[in-house]
Image 1 (cartoon, rainbow, N blue to C red):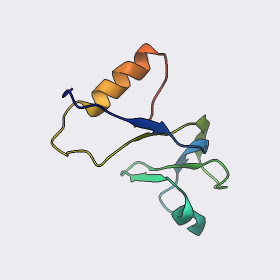
Image 2 (image 1 turned 180 degrees about the vertical axis):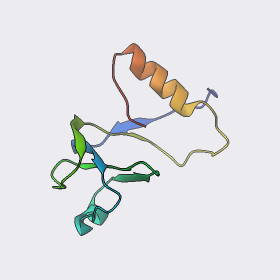
Image 3 (image 1 turned 90 degrees about the horizontal axis):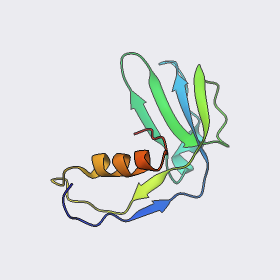
Image 4 (image 1 turned 135 degrees about the vertical axis):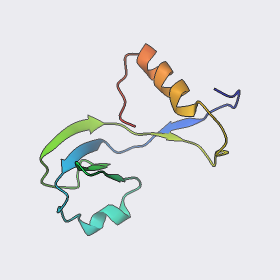
Length: 97
């Protein structure tokens, strides 16, 4: 990793990771959230959002906290995620990235 100092903060909310059907309608209240992440692949739709947003899902994993990397970061920096995941792994903290 480059020698850039990375500043992290922990978001206040507790989050849940959902595995959703491609046809799932997402609630409008997501737009109001401090943070949410939606990823789409041919196999599934994955949503990370605050636990209080109620969504029916095929599978979910509750009780996650989100780390926020302070930015903006130079997009040419390398090894940011590798450095973070290595540090968290040494502390026996699992990640979803």
